[in-house]
Length: 202
Image 1 (cartoon, rainbow, N blue to C red):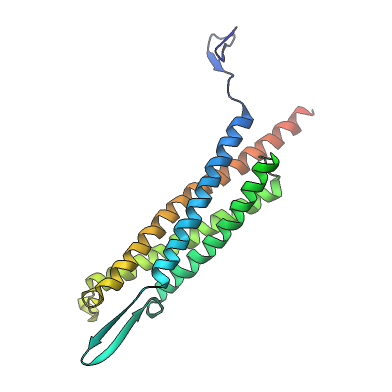
Image 2 (cartoon, rainbow, N blue to C red):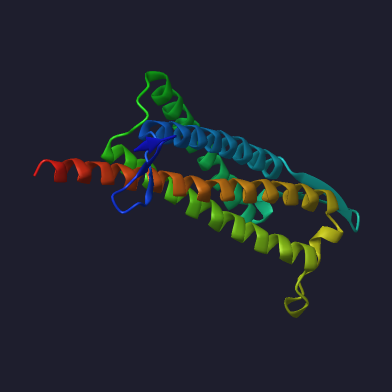
């Protein structure tokens, strides 16, 4: 018996039959495309906010200009987000082409490549955010034991803009972690389909 997509198994346990695998794949592809677009935008904003940040301060009649290049962690953050933006843009084009052609499913080698790339981008950007956040804390609070000054007391505008960039990078990193889960789901589901087809041949 089947009513509203719910069947009754011989053990009188309701079994749901209404989910179409292609519908799931399409929804996953749309979620992937949206996340990749969001990552691309957030990564570009991070690179622009941090990369264009500077402030000139006059200290004892000497002008000192603060730039993101003065902190290696910020350089790492800008480079990592630039790479992430370029990678995401390429993947967005791939997703759009696949959806236009109607080929939602990808082959196994391509799925492995996407999974590996997404994992690498996630690890790279999480590491960059961690390093930048640590440097930002030192700049904000200083370190009395090492006689490090509170740089943000002198370069307030510079620190505020860096903080905005790091916030964007944190959001981008969260999206990358979610995207890594989606690419893992796609890969393992594809492997499961291949395995099921192989077993059905016996």
